[in-house]
Image (cartoon, rainbow, N blue to C red; front, side, top):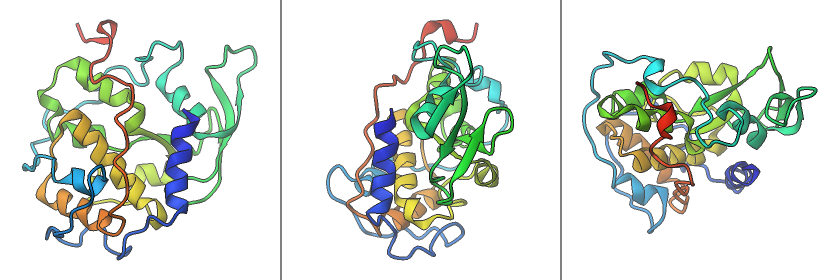
Length: 241
């Protein structure tokens, strides 16, 4: 899993920054006409269904299963899997079997570029759902069965260790309303959102699609991340009864 994080940061370091990095949330819904090459995140945006946002009625975190379920059956919860993947200098709790991450360093935080120390129990590091669960609920997930919602909530493609303050600032924002302050990471960030929405068949609003294309037009070669090995259905033992 460490390789995935390395790919993300390498792309950012290579200068995947939009031509107009100031363009971001709140810049309107006019859609750029640019299209990217096959296999690019920019090209994939055009494959996403565009619809209006559905009501948030009925949304509850419990609709996506128990937090950080071990859906890949490796014996560790999803949160610890992501911490192990994304942190450096990881240490585990004494006597633990290699699951419970006790400390490490997020170096750097992909959203700010700062180094953040993780200490279990008083952490300044969160695990962000790149496509927020509330956003997913309003763009298709409320129509799914429990197994698909649980899969989305625990899919490594949709999860990233980040600084807590920025994660909480983001809330349930989509590309049209929130982008990482670290401009060098915006192409990676939006590409991952496109990949998640494509994998799970979630739709986008017109403003969201325009914002995705605005960012990715500045990095048209940005590849669409692979969907990964995680299935879009969680194991039957996690399904709501």
